Image (cartoon, rainbow, N blue to C red; front, side, top):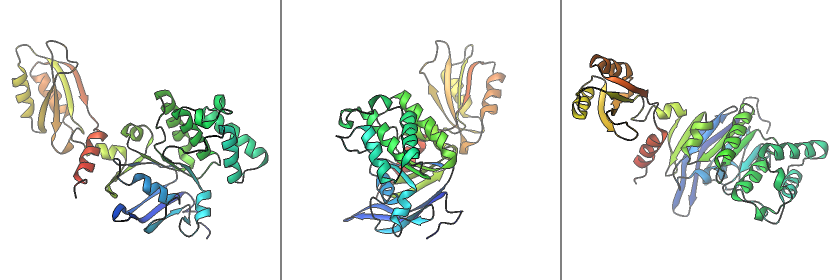
Amino acid sequence: MQATSSQAGRVEIRGLSKWFGPILAVDNVSFQVEQGEVLGFLGPNGAGKSTTMKMVTGFVGPSSGTAVVCGHDVTEEPLAAKEKIGYLPEGAPAYPDMTPEAFLNFIADVRGMKGEHRRKRIGEVVERVHIGGVLRQPIETLSKGFKRRVGLAQAILHDPRVLIMDEPTDGLDPNQKHEVRALIREMAPGKVIILSTHILEEVEAVCTRAVVIARGRIVADGTPEQLQARSRFHNAVRITFRGAGVTAADAGGELSKLAGVASVERRTEGVKDGSLCFMALPKRGHPIVAEVGQHARARGWQIDELHVETGRLDDVFREITANNSKA
């Protein structure tokens, strides 16, 4: 079947479900991802992330539903769909007795790459993921980080329209994580990118959208900013100040009585002697920084810090997944 122009840069997941015996691992999952999006597919361990990715890439057949990759149904046109996909699975499995050089040439054979294009493309990905120094070393002798980079190299070797990665920075040191995230951002405009992760830092660093799954079901879908806005810390104000004669109890009581403030929590970490610090949490996420600042100035408090929180993904993640982890 010929893909339409509107489908050529899209992944559509339609009602995917997967049973393993009596266990429902993925429960009627549906969403679509367009070219230029970097989708973070989030969830706690055992939520169904890897199983969903395996169904989308054709490694595991669905019990019901399907996925359409650039116009090709993975159940009806598996080879055509897989041609469009670069896949970095969990653990980045490879042939341990091969060298990265031999492995990439093997993948090039599988992908039907030939001649100068093949040679040039292998050179490009080797440089981009920085594995030139270990090209002729058996993969089984490589560190976890280098094995991960070899896995990433094979996933992007054929310059796929769709890139699906399961924990792409697992095992990498901070510098390597930075490099991989920069590469993802660089590739994003021309690809559909889906990365499965439980690392919230990854979402904030590279994702334009996040889908959260718990117990096999989608429980949230939005931009990182939209998810952060669901945090109780969204628009919360951290204020550190000094005030002659004011006690912590008095200051906290005054702040808690402000019209827009839902609650006040005292902070002591990193606070200098003689200073007081509070976190004022807003009602319904409404901005309160002006109200808090005006009150502090009116009381003559000497403000050292007045900081507005954007919201915390870890806070939202815990709340969403915990609320959906109960049978």
